[in-house]
Image (cartoon, rainbow, N blue to C red):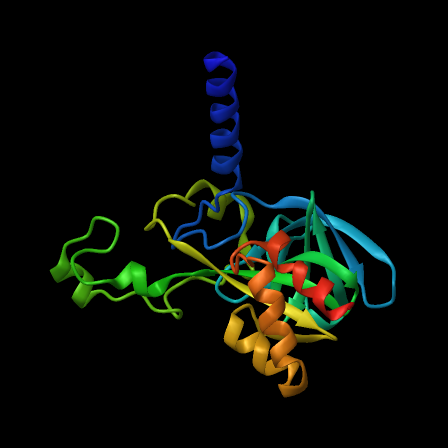
Length: 223
């Protein structure tokens, strides 16, 4: 029995490790390399190509036929699928989504670079406090990689500082993104639903950092 539990724990750990975003200042991307993904174009057609998501800018990048990294214009596609991950543009950024009742109601997660952690006093990721205070990393310092050779960038992807990634959670209601917090949601639902929503939250322990838990909010709206 202990052996089975140990093997299960190891499998779970391996899954979590694979799910982690391994990004650097020299490779600020969602995936460790470009993945074959599907773009759902604005005209309804689809296109398959090697794609990745720039974590800072929230843009979609792809590798063209010459092996160069390019940016896909936001207006040319409505959604993206990479493996089991689905993305939509929310508040100007590509966010991973968990589908809700329909296309205008879903949960969205934005993974972003934690620049504060990278620059925190006392040494950012192993650097000394002196170095950290004099060599601050800003959004301007992180490369965009557009019109650069994919293989050259990939080969040097781990040569920079390791980036800490944090997630921001949103509930999209009728196409409008609301930060996934009790306060923000209560305000968004309006005064007429405030009392009922508070009662709902008492009965349902919502984890504000878990997509499946956040989907319960749509159960309340369906009542």
